[in-house]
Amino acid sequence: MATTATISLSSDIMSTYSGYSKTMTLTKGGTLVDIDATTGFQRRKFASTTAKDLITMASLLIETEDGASGGTGASKLYVKNIGDGRGNLNKDKYVAVSLGTLEGTIQEISKLYGGDWMMIPVTGIDVTSDVVVTPETNDAVVLEYAMYYQED
Image (cartoon, rainbow, N blue to C red; front, side):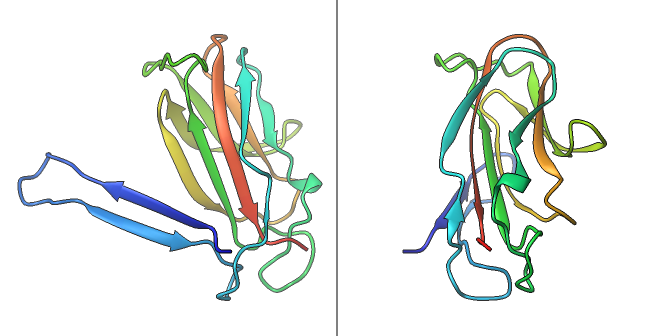
Protein backbone atom coordinates (compact mmCIF):
# COMPACT_ATOMS: atom_id res chain seq x y z
CA MET A 1 0.00 0.00 0.00
CA ALA A 2 1.42 3.36 -1.04
CA THR A 3 1.82 6.42 1.18
CA THR A 4 0.82 9.62 -0.59
CA ALA A 5 0.83 13.31 0.29
CA THR A 6 -1.54 15.83 -1.32
CA ILE A 7 -1.50 19.62 -1.22
CA SER A 8 -4.11 21.98 -2.65
CA LEU A 9 -3.40 25.70 -2.88
CA SER A 10 -5.84 28.48 -3.69
CA SER A 11 -5.40 32.23 -3.43
CA ASP A 12 -7.17 35.46 -4.33
CA ILE A 13 -3.95 37.47 -4.47
CA MET A 14 -3.96 37.39 -8.29
CA SER A 15 -7.13 37.34 -10.38
CA THR A 16 -5.46 35.11 -13.00
CA TYR A 17 -4.32 32.47 -10.49
CA SER A 18 -6.71 29.56 -10.08
CA GLY A 19 -4.57 27.50 -7.68
CA TYR A 20 -3.37 23.94 -7.98
CA SER A 21 -3.42 20.52 -6.38
CA LYS A 22 -0.47 18.12 -6.34
CA THR A 23 -0.08 14.55 -5.08
CA MET A 24 3.18 12.78 -4.36
CA THR A 25 3.74 9.09 -3.64
CA LEU A 26 6.46 8.59 -1.02
CA THR A 27 9.04 6.20 -2.48
CA LYS A 28 12.50 4.98 -1.60
CA GLY A 29 15.33 7.10 -3.03
CA GLY A 30 15.95 6.52 -6.74
CA THR A 31 13.19 3.90 -7.07
CA LEU A 32 9.48 3.47 -7.58
CA VAL A 33 9.29 1.24 -4.48
CA ASP A 34 7.03 2.53 -1.70
CA ILE A 35 8.69 3.91 1.40
CA ASP A 36 8.45 1.22 4.08
CA ALA A 37 8.77 2.77 7.55
CA THR A 38 7.35 5.53 9.71
CA THR A 39 7.65 6.88 13.23
CA GLY A 40 3.85 6.86 13.23
CA PHE A 41 1.58 9.86 13.64
CA GLN A 42 2.22 11.42 17.04
CA ARG A 43 1.40 14.48 19.14
CA ARG A 44 3.67 16.02 21.73
CA LYS A 45 3.15 18.97 24.09
CA PHE A 46 5.87 21.51 24.91
CA ALA A 47 5.73 24.22 27.59
CA SER A 48 9.19 25.81 27.72
CA THR A 49 11.66 27.56 25.44
CA THR A 50 14.19 24.76 25.92
CA ALA A 51 15.24 23.01 22.71
CA LYS A 52 14.05 19.37 22.63
CA ASP A 53 14.53 16.43 20.30
CA LEU A 54 11.32 15.76 18.39
CA ILE A 55 12.76 12.81 16.46
CA THR A 56 15.98 11.07 17.44
CA MET A 57 17.38 9.86 14.14
CA ALA A 58 19.77 7.32 15.69
CA SER A 59 16.77 5.39 17.05
CA LEU A 60 15.49 4.76 13.52
CA LEU A 61 16.89 2.08 11.20
CA ILE A 62 17.41 4.45 8.28
CA GLU A 63 18.99 3.50 4.97
CA THR A 64 20.88 5.77 2.59
CA GLU A 65 19.92 6.07 -1.06
CA ASP A 66 22.80 3.76 -2.01
CA GLY A 67 21.62 1.08 0.43
CA ALA A 68 24.21 1.63 3.17
CA SER A 69 23.21 2.04 6.82
CA GLY A 70 23.49 5.30 8.69
CA GLY A 71 21.92 7.87 6.36
CA THR A 72 18.54 9.40 5.72
CA GLY A 73 17.72 8.08 2.23
CA ALA A 74 14.35 9.32 1.08
CA SER A 75 13.00 10.49 4.43
CA LYS A 76 10.04 12.88 4.57
CA LEU A 77 9.15 14.91 7.67
CA TYR A 78 5.68 16.28 8.52
CA VAL A 79 5.23 18.70 11.45
CA LYS A 80 2.21 20.87 12.35
CA ASN A 81 1.74 23.41 15.17
CA ILE A 82 -1.81 22.69 16.39
CA GLY A 83 -1.75 25.35 19.10
CA ASP A 84 -2.36 24.49 22.74
CA GLY A 85 -4.16 21.23 21.94
CA ARG A 86 -7.52 22.70 22.99
CA GLY A 87 -8.35 24.43 19.73
CA ASN A 88 -6.55 27.72 20.48
CA LEU A 89 -4.02 28.81 17.84
CA ASN A 90 -1.47 31.50 18.66
CA LYS A 91 -0.57 33.07 15.31
CA ASP A 92 1.86 35.48 17.05
CA LYS A 93 4.22 32.84 18.46
CA TYR A 94 6.17 30.10 16.73
CA VAL A 95 8.04 26.87 17.27
CA ALA A 96 11.41 26.73 15.49
CA VAL A 97 12.13 23.41 13.74
CA SER A 98 15.81 22.59 13.28
CA LEU A 99 18.19 19.79 12.32
CA GLY A 100 21.21 19.07 14.52
CA THR A 101 21.95 18.00 18.06
CA LEU A 102 21.09 19.44 21.44
CA GLU A 103 24.76 19.23 22.45
CA GLY A 104 26.11 20.73 19.24
CA THR A 105 25.02 22.91 16.36
CA ILE A 106 21.45 23.10 15.11
CA GLN A 107 20.35 24.59 11.80
CA GLU A 108 16.90 26.16 11.86
CA ILE A 109 14.82 25.13 8.85
CA SER A 110 11.40 26.55 9.71
CA LYS A 111 9.27 28.58 12.11
CA LEU A 112 5.78 27.17 12.53
CA TYR A 113 3.20 29.63 13.88
CA GLY A 114 -0.16 28.36 15.16
CA GLY A 115 -1.83 26.33 12.40
CA ASP A 116 1.30 26.25 10.20
CA TRP A 117 2.64 22.94 8.93
CA MET A 118 5.43 21.64 6.78
CA MET A 119 6.32 18.49 4.89
CA ILE A 120 9.88 18.36 3.62
CA PRO A 121 12.44 15.85 2.45
CA VAL A 122 15.08 15.34 5.13
CA THR A 123 18.60 14.49 4.14
CA GLY A 124 21.49 14.40 6.54
CA ILE A 125 25.09 13.34 6.51
CA ASP A 126 24.63 11.03 9.46
CA VAL A 127 22.00 9.86 11.87
CA THR A 128 23.33 12.03 14.68
CA SER A 129 21.42 15.02 13.26
CA ASP A 130 18.07 14.95 15.05
CA VAL A 131 14.90 16.94 14.43
CA VAL A 132 14.98 19.58 17.19
CA VAL A 133 12.16 21.96 18.16
CA THR A 134 12.35 25.16 20.20
CA PRO A 135 9.14 26.98 21.21
CA GLU A 136 9.36 30.78 21.23
CA THR A 137 7.56 31.06 24.60
CA ASN A 138 6.79 28.99 27.70
CA ASP A 139 3.12 28.80 26.66
CA ALA A 140 1.83 25.28 25.99
CA VAL A 141 2.05 24.24 22.35
CA VAL A 142 1.29 20.87 20.76
CA LEU A 143 3.02 19.57 17.66
CA GLU A 144 1.73 16.72 15.57
CA TYR A 145 4.34 14.97 13.49
CA ALA A 146 5.40 11.90 11.53
CA MET A 147 8.51 10.88 9.67
CA TYR A 148 8.46 8.48 6.74
CA TYR A 149 11.73 6.80 5.81
CA GLN A 150 13.30 3.81 4.10
CA GLU A 151 14.22 1.22 6.63
CA ASP A 152 17.66 -0.40 6.75
